[in-house]
Structures are given as C-alpha cells and as structure tokens.
Length: 426
Image 1 (tube, rainbow, N blue to C red):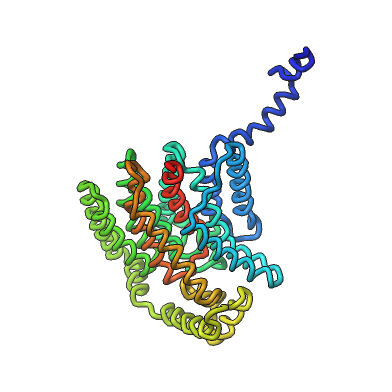
Image 2 (image 1 turned 180 degrees about the vertical axis):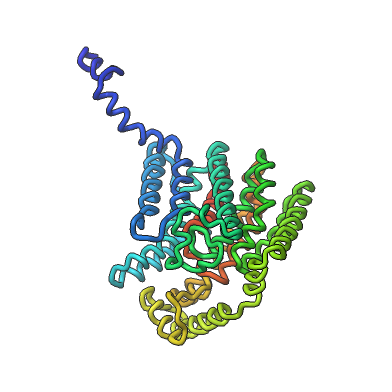
C-alpha cells in the first residue's frame, strides 16, 4: 500500500475523522435498531396534533424503515412472512390504498390510512427482525415502563387538578381532539388513553421479571389513572383484566399481588371520590350520563344504514365521512366518526373488510396456542397474557374507531416479538 493511501487512512487525518463522524449515526442505527424502534414509538406517542410537527411521526417511521431495511440487506436476512397474518394485513392495506388513490389527495385521510393499516403492517414485520435477542427486548421493556409511568403521572395530575404538571401543553387545549374534561393523554381521546394504560400495564407484568418493585408501584397507582379517564368501557375492561390476569399467570404470588392491587385500587378510588366533592360529583355524573350514549347510538344507526346500502363495496373514505355528517344533521358535533372499529370497517369496505379483520385477529389469537419447544422468559410470559391483551383491544374497539397508531403499534409489535422466536428456530 502506498504512503499516500496510508496517510489518508491515518486516524490523524482530519478528512478521515470527518468521514467517521458522518458515518457514526449510520453505524449506530445499524447496530441498535431496537433503540430506533422505541424512539419511533415515542414519537408516535407524543406526536402533536398541530401542523408544526405534523409529519414528525412519518419522518421517524421512514428512518426506522430505512435502517432496518439496510440492516436486513447487509445481513442478507429474509423478509419475514406469515401467511395467516401478512396476507390479511396486506389485503386490508391494499383495499384502503386503492380506494383512496381514486380520490383527490387529502392529507388527513392518508394519515388515517397510514395509522390504521400501513404503519402496523410495517411494524409487525420490522418487530420480527428487530426483537430477536434479550438485549433488544430489554430496550422495549424499558420503553414500556417509561411510557406507562408517564401516562399514569399525567392522568393522576389531571385527576387532582395539578394541570401545571401536564406536558405537552396541547393536552389541555380544549380546541383539539375529544374529551377535554377527562384524562385523555397525548392521544386527545379518553378511550385511547385508557386502552394504552391497560395494555402497557399487561406488558409491564409480562416483561419485567427483575423490576418487581417498579411493577408493583405502577400497578398500585394504575387504578387511579384508569379512573381518571372517566370512561365506563375502560373501567370495565381494566377490572376484568386485573382479575383474569391473576389467574392466567401461574405463579401464586403474582395472583395474590394482582388481586390485592385490584382491591387497593378500588378502595383508593372510592376514598378519593368520597373525600373530594367535585370528583364525587363528576364520577356520579359520568356514570349516569346519557347524552354521549344517545349520540353514539344515533351514529351507529346512521352507519348501519350506510352499510346496508352498500354491503359489499362500502363507501369511499371522503364520501363516507361526508355522508355520515349529512345523516347526523340534527347533532352539532365537531367531527363525525362511527366510533366503532367493526362498524367502520363495514361502512368503508363492506363485508370483505370485516371478514379480513376477523381472519387477522383469529390468527393473532393463534399465537398463544402453540409455543415453540423450550420457550421461556419474557416471550413465554407475553404468550400467556397475549389473549388478554387482544381482548382488551377488541373490547374497546366497540367504543372507538382504532386509528391511534401508538395503540395499534403496541399490539403488532408484541405480535412480531411472538413470531420472532419461530422464525429464529426455523
């Protein structure tokens, strides 16, 4: 090798140092894809609804896809494919994209399609590639603990009216989203916040084998955070989840802890409600409130009528929302959504859309039926609680159209982690 080449490759060469610094992010992205993954999920959680970082989540998603794709090619790895899951997800994504391509471009509709179909489809397959080892799963575990702690903190801050502690501040903006009078979190929707609290609570118990003090502490205050959502569907699913979770996990100590924490949470919630007159009034008003139920039933009637008119072809995305608003003329709502995932699928795609969704979730449930030989640790614990997690998601989907990519992303990330050991063992 010539002396000129040796001089160029010398560590003292400033050009070589600059090149090393420029390539350092590329090296880190390829070496730690799980860190990129949880960073993207964090952006999904904190994505502001205003126009100023409107595309922040898309940029984070694009960076994640780029680095994982580059790493897959460098390692000559196979792109994961599971017929029972990949095909229905791909079919739903294709249905949504092909229908919206026939209409003028609408950023909001494309954002909804990305959140409901494109991003979850990609995250599932990326999770299979990324979360194969113990260190990668630990990164996800830490993220789950921090996300749950954050959501619990701001929910309780809202409950005790410590609004100066709530961050980001757009959560308190009554002109954005829904349910400004409840603990709605950065999702700006109380049901989505409650589902996230419930799912993250399940994941914390399954993943955190060595952080029992942290898990116990979070579960002791989690019932108060759920109470702060002021949402009956969330209360119901959390109460049932807590009981079933104790019986699903085989260890007797965990059963006792779950049952004990359920009782503690109930007592703390009742004590708080009785001791605080305004909170007591809010709880009673929320329990007996009929207005939202009547409006929701009217939306269901309008959506069902639209489905019956086009049971096989469904309505185009732009036309669906406009037609729903026309049929709800007597109600003065800011936006018109079906507020039911299954009815939304029927209205938009007809029977084929709901059938594909049913096939997808049937195969998701199957992930818990047959575990690979010798499976243990966090993945085995995840497989035990997986049916509970899916039931929480599907139950709450009756009361909201699941278009929240953080919530959907959590579900399909865990699905990818459950599929990864099978692929590694193959």
